[in-house]
Length: 219
Image 1: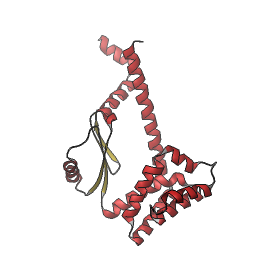
Image 2: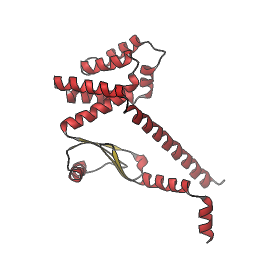
Image 3: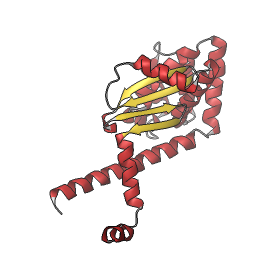
Image 4: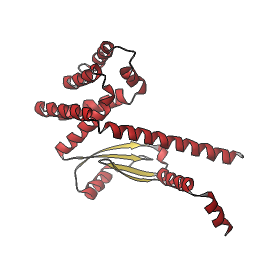
């Protein structure tokens, strides 16, 4: 096997492994989002937030938790570990987040920890975000681009005009896209990236019958 063939083979294996991981994560989140417990916690939290007029405060706190707790594998492993007692987890939680997030949010996490349901936190946050967007009649839009966008306002206005709805847009750079843009509008994904084109081509090649390809080349 020459170096070029080996390189392409390695990259294909890497991409396939990445795709399987992405599908696994997506399936896990889809399963969690149908968990009645997480929905109940989210709705209870939203009701309390509405009564106290702290909906946006809680949203900001949840965003902080996603960045500092949920998305950090090492930290989240600590909180879901069965080898660490609940009191220690709650103690650490209070020490780090007390006076930095709403008391109600802190209480929610403590309850999830005490009931050994902290794995539902991400999905509870997801549902709360959905309820908030619905309450404010705003669509959540996530944009991923290969390179920095010069005129974000123009893009935001274009999406608003397209769907005829107010939006709350977040933009992130993702070099793995190679070129193009990926837009997630309320969970519906519009992928116009080179990475997606290559992925589709790869799938086409993997699904093809080699004998058919050989026959076409010969003919």
